[in-house]
Image 1 (cartoon, rainbow, N blue to C red):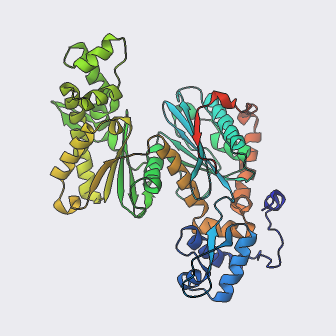
Image 2: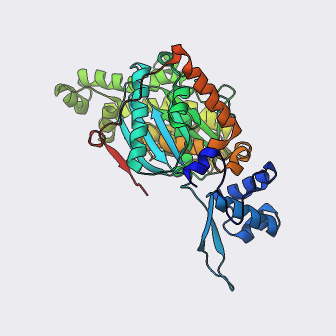
Image 3: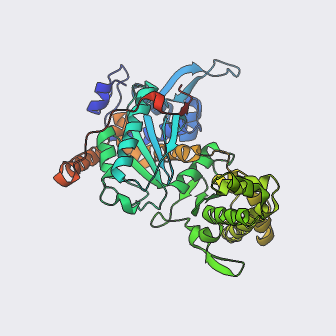
Length: 463
């Protein structure tokens, strides 16, 4: 679709002129989502699955084709007659920007409307730096990644994940910045992103987006019930039920790091007794006292002992490091076993560098969960480590945006416009955020120029 047509919120004229009335929206929505999710790939399958008549299906596909949302140019396999035309969703109709903000890392990516990452970039970040510095860097990277892609499509949505619970409703569009981190209080980051890129913004916690990433691109079937556990300085969980992320009443589901556990006569929060800081501290003590030759050598070279070092030492057979990792794994296992008995997940996935750099912690978690759970709970339960690494949050952030864009209620509001940017709800958001930023106290400086490409280390599969 042309930029002029998209800007005006209308569709280009064809001999099968699209309907602009709201009356066609329900059937257009149903057909588009059947095609987009792969439930129907031919006109005959659409008629059978949607229970809509042939004339209506033909008319709606003409409309969706004119809106550049579907394509019928490819022929399928003939089964005794003429080969059917395949109906394909046009995942290139728009773009999605995604970012993950972690305590020490920033990731950005560009995806198509299927949630497939087209290119991504990761770099170090100090999230304790002024919010203005982080926002400027984020905007600069977004501008750069769009320029690098050389794509002309509009950005349809932005997904941001942060290392904190996100207090936003599941439905609706954001027009103000919810509280995420103390240092960001008073920062109009949502309003600024909306006005800069003219696209709606969705926020989720990092553990939530990582769980969605595992579901969409990991080894877990899409309709599974999964418990995702991220192990780091903080320990959190994401729950996916029947393929849907459960966020809780205030978006704070999964704060398992606060649950009390006991170890060696000490009682405290799980993340305090089993998190990466505690693992690193135990490793430093073992190195100083000569209990771990592997870690003592690192310390002698003037190196800082990290939780990853302890995990690698355990993987190499260092007895003391193995016990440190096993102790953390057992503590985490006790909490996960209680959750497994209550939730009966089909998959438990452990993530974070501590869980992904060695098998000792994973083995300890498995031992406790299988030992403390009901036989029905563990009969078909799989406990694995994530293989997505730092890409999990970006994949999940893209999935969150795509799911929101094509959610039935929101899709109905924009489908006859050809783009969510023409939805009345979003047009209202544009007005509200423009007014908010126009206030003198909310003024922000000009966006910096995109960084030099040679300054960035990126990976991608631009298509």
